[in-house]
Image 1 (cartoon, rainbow, N blue to C red):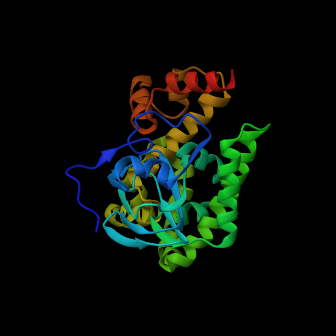
Image 2: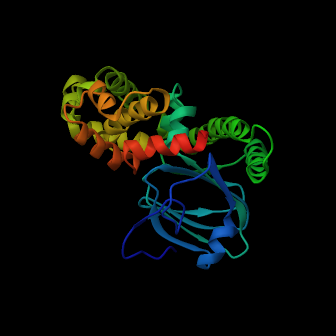
Image 3: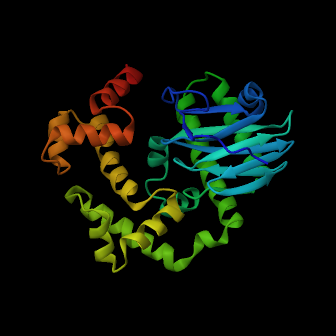
Amino acid sequence: MIRPAAAVRHYSLYGEREHLPDVMHCETIAERSVLYEWELAPHRHDRLHQLLLLRAGGGMTRLADAELALGAGSLVNVPPGTVHAFTFEPGTDGLVLTLADALLDELLAREPEVRRLLGRAWVGRADDGIDALAARLAREYAGRATARALVLRGLAGTLLGCAARAGARADPMARNMTESHLLQRFEALLEAHYREHWGVADYARALAVTPTHLSRVARAASGAPASRLIDARVIREARRQLAFTHLSVASIAYTLGFVDPALFSRVFTRVAGRSPRAFRRELQTRSG
């Protein structure tokens, strides 16, 4: 049984507040859990996606409102923003892989079905292929070989694809065709109109559904309400322009349909966790 917490905490990695400094993060379950007597209280990561693989031992997890048992071979998918908690048996062995949402955007830009499957919190079963991939990724992460970042990205993309297959087996309802079709239409409209700053009601009207229904379907598929997906699409384009163009922050704001650059900066900071200028400085520091 997982004990309820007085308040849900927001972390980068559990117990930490700093942004993810590397391409991704990989650690054993014991590495962090032993510091907290094998119990991680309910918390959330707003901009991090986690996959947790148990190899031996067991425990319990809470994913949103569901409590589920874990055993050897369990694969836990935790999308950004999902409230989750763990209680492990002492000595439990396994890996925790953490990826920034920006990396997921990069890897899954043309994989809407994979994004939907990984946008739901679930517990599935890891096959030998997933176990081998996770072990290879952990070794690569621990080393400093040439092209490390490139290899990590490639392994992460493969692992996400295999995890999506496990998610499809774990939760057949993720393939509900009616809701999947609605989400596809929403995503197409979002691509067409995100610069116009449509709200949830505008998209719902165009899709002939209620805003409540649209948000429910969006949350079920991605773990986030429609409003957050709308903001995320605008900020994803902002990140791309900050990274790959020399446009000023104000110019980027105007190209994205903001009449006030200050408003753009506030929205970007709320969604991305730092200002547009700070985001660009981070990129320049990493590439310098």
